[in-house]
Length: 252
Image (cartoon, rainbow, N blue to C red; front, top):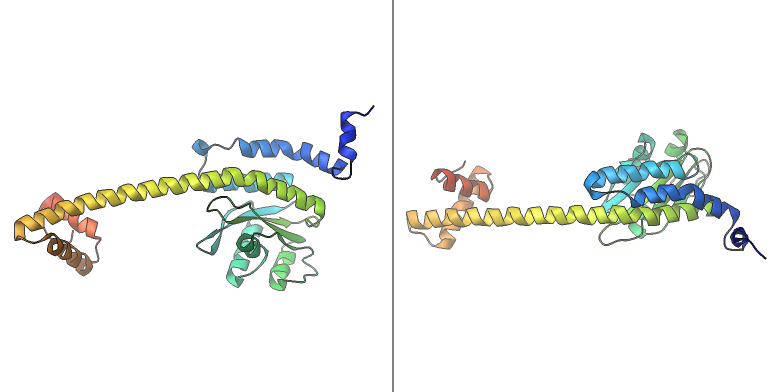
């Protein structure tokens, strides 16, 4: 007869994996409880990097790189070391975090004292007490392209056990992160749509006033609004709002 614990000793699942599961499951549960009502995207990402620093090996400083229109940005970091090394890679246009976020492949510097790639990044990392670097792409969800960057201070983070743990963490973290990203994007689009509708309404009112006052066509009235807009370096909507609100046709 075998006990349930015997199942953890097969070739595919080892004691280390079991202990990792027990140690990190509360952190994964914490990620699953993150609420839209309590967080913005920035604050949620700050929580993700803080949790990563607690549960990942190597006493790491962590960050999240997000690509927006192809440009990388650090949207959260658990310490200045990560921010500094991220920004160095952005200036160079290359490095583990840029590569992982843009290609969707895990990227690493196993030993910053003996780099085979990105020597300038490795040198700066070593000077700041970082022994190894692992950048792991967040699984692609909708429009989000990002990477979790792990800068380890105590020992290498590039062993297979750590890779599995970082991979699992990224899989859990991407769910609340991508959901919040899509939520904020939808809210922004809705706000932009409402602004556009409001602008169209006031511009139509202003066109009507000009058409009536100066006997213009609709096209002529709109061109008159845009001319004042360009001459005064003012938005067409603001010129229209000034006319509707005061009856005066000119720059507000």
